[in-house]
Image (cartoon, rainbow, N blue to C red; front, side, top):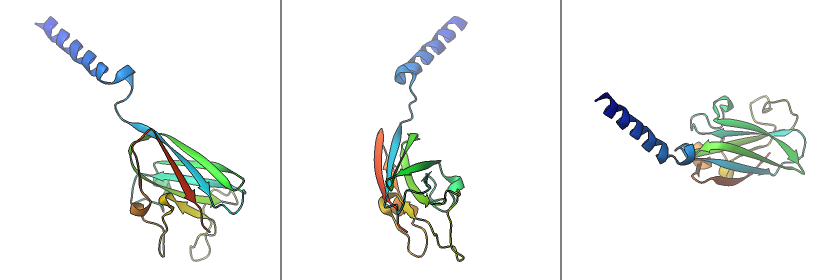
Length: 150
């Protein structure tokens, strides 16, 4: 009886291994390529945050799903997020022109550096909303263009 049970378990394990071809994960992932334009200079870097959490977008960068720092050349920057599970996301960008690692603001909190978000979403009297900036990653590759405004 024990031999039959072992054979059944081995058969189930083999069947499960065949359901994911060549050992690849069943979870679908893709890449998001982002071109950032509208930059007023090539000084500093662009800081790009990928958000999956609507409550964090864009004001809580520490809660971003992934963050990248991109080099600027000829007032354009490009970054690429890899191994991103399919789903809904929004991207927030700022031009860290003085390369100090933070978004500089004036005395009342209005940003002094350029900002942008996916879908070129803009906020009224505050940051853009996730619902306006969200996009769906459901392919192997997703190409986005974001224009920074000052």
